Image (tube, rainbow, N blue to C red; front, side, top):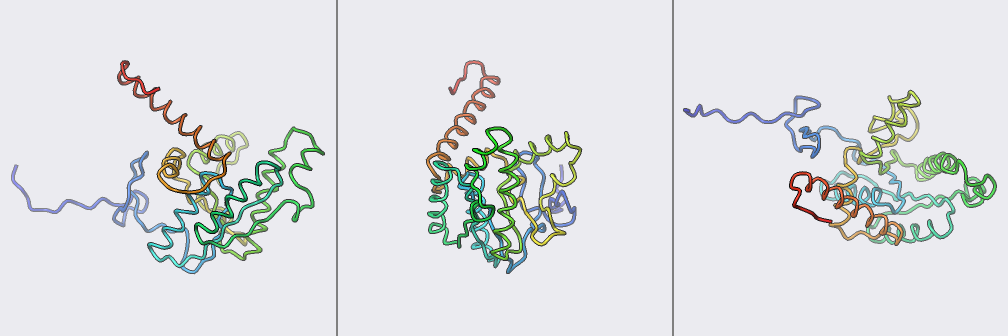
Length: 249
């Protein structure tokens, strides 16, 4: 076949269909350009930090992107102290170490200061049922309150692609699926909330955490080990399906 001398056509962005693609999503294989930005230079951004794998990787990625590409963002760590004795204590100490490790300002907001109750005291009053309903609402309000104290322009949380999928399934039962699929919500309010790792799968976050040198509390380190075991077991099942004589675990 004779060569025509034509240059290969550049792959265009799947969303805008105008700009040249800069990356490819690993699962959907969609080609995406760099034109979709969540932040503007000079914005103050609060990071909901819980010491979990998602918020830890989120803080690191935002810090690295801000440094490498000179985005001009002012980043803050914003953890919430619910008052879980024996659990949140270790997490908060780890977040304080992350403050030194990342060199980011830290602001801790607590249930006790905001509501006059810790979550432990609430559990003693209401019992062991519906605790997550109380804690979820109070924690979200505490994040917004802390963001308002810091006077940030946007609040980012570590909801990954798996979290979004679970939220969609739950919201379908409630008949509310419009908001849960957006990457940025609350734009009509004082502080928009961004899910910056919405398109990142949980296993990818685990891989990043394995390859990095981040600090996590002992409990979250144990949870991370369980995620690794599950990933290995799932991989083993796939490999055994392809080759019955092959076994990893």
